Length: 305
Image 1: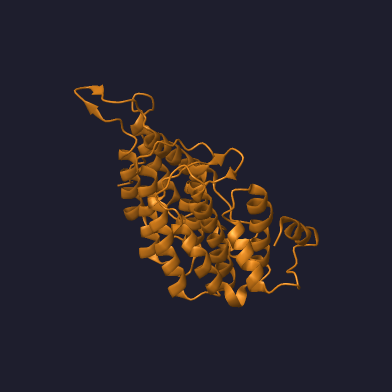
Image 2: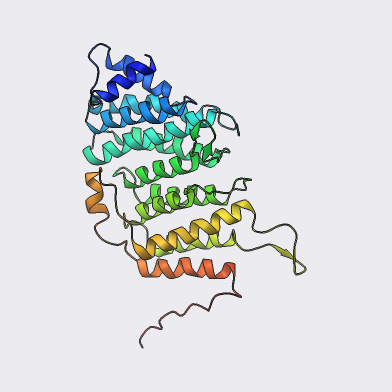
């Protein structure tokens, strides 16, 4: 269908047109998700699909819709700097919406969500194109959209302690993997929010989270040989890791809220995460260790004897 056709659908209240089958309409919109023209992708395809998902249009077809979206995560995977990243990124963003619908309505089988989770995490740690904004093509944002997908998975009732631990490890792998890109479009905030979503599940104790934080902390300490730096520091990945830890600290300190359009978030985010105080100190330890000459030592309360 033409751009004019979809503009008319948007202007008529985003209702599902009656002159085409839902299958035909969906195939066209999903194809538009990978289009380099942001008007087609961001102003038409994405809002229409998310509206229809939210209105329950796909409730009986949600598994098939997700199965049709997931292959987009592999499209051009390994390429860096071309338009293929748009297909991968918006496939992740749409899959997050599908899983979000299931989190609210409990429509999907466990097997589908776990399979999509495997495919999503495999894509995320292998994604090489970290561009946020592309001139004339708009947002690519694979890192941010992937974080949104991990946050949706972290909310899923199908993800237990083991799966949530895997998500933590995937986030650490993503943050620490060497890259030439410096994140400057809110990627660190989106990834930190994914971690906060996971922590609000209260399924992981500090014995799991603190070693994970220690691993991240190793990524921001400058390597030294005979007292001097061997290369410019911080590297892009070290800078990204530092920004991520600082974003996580701020979100732990201030608290975060759920999405207004997800009813299930009201309960999930009603209280601060368990062990919040301990985790705040653990994150601060890593931030302080990056520049020990600058910050005062941590003062931890001594147990009463």
